[in-house]
Image (cartoon, rainbow, N blue to C red; front, top):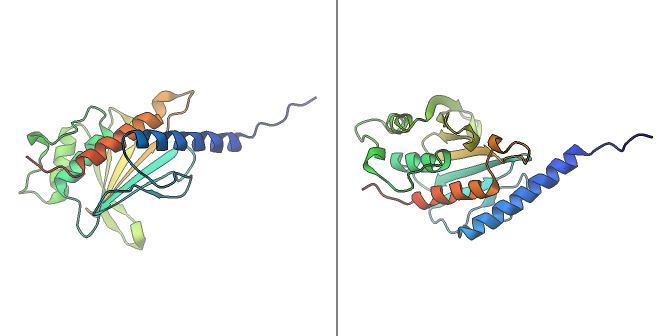
Amino acid sequence: MTAAPCNQSADADQAATGRLRELHRELDLWGIVTGDLAAGTPASVLNLPGTRCEICSPAPGALTLTYQPRERDLRPYEAIWLTLALLDANGPWTPVEALVPDRKLPPTAAVSRVLASRGMTVEPAQDGHGGEATAALLISNPASRSRGRLTISGGRELTWECRFAEPDSPGAGLSPSDTARAIAAALAVAAAEPR
């Protein structure tokens, strides 16, 4: 007698759907309203005037958050604070003087300098977004790899990519609760002005 084969793909899809539902509930607790979070389909984060913000699960266990101001570039301080909120669980969640970029530097250099001073790895790259090569920054936190990585493309769009933690290896990603907390922190500082 042979055991029936386990359908790992169906189990992974079911677990991923459960994590997306849990993330949706957690975001709702933070007052963040989104469209339906379904695998492979971007869901808009609602009630963010002047901004396109979407959450998507491109593959089971993976999550992306895309943030793009409408009709303007990301401001350097905005890119810094969003990055730290998403990649550094220790904050800060409010603007402080040490995080205000040097206005004498080009925006990319100013952002890179501040993030590097906070322990982030910042690498220049090219992004093939939209069929054109665009200058990009690839950013990660070597002290907290489970928080994923972030790309700032062309100074206009920020994309955070992370993985959900698996029950058998919690350090390899974020729980839906930690993911919602990071998104809430990022969106709370998105409109902040430097002091």
